[in-house]
Amino acid sequence: MGTPDNWRKSSYSGPGDGNSCVEIANNRTRVAIRDSKTPAGATLAFPTAAFTPFIEALKHTPPTATP
Image 1 (tube, rainbow, N blue to C red):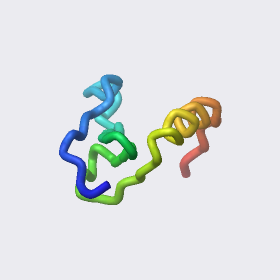
Image 2: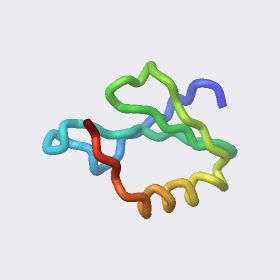
Image 3: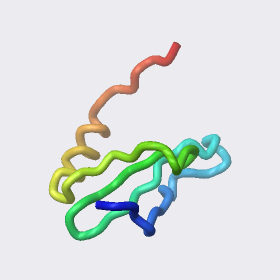
């Protein structure tokens, strides 16, 4: 996918949630995701057709406890 230049932050991200969010970029064949707090860090990339099932699976996964 290379380095996308069309990153956008979720509309759910804001000061009330600590600005903890992800950014997403897409093209015709891939969707990339990165942490908005570390944009130079690693990204995840999915084939476009796999992205919607990935998001749906996340919606139905209970959150895990953090130490």
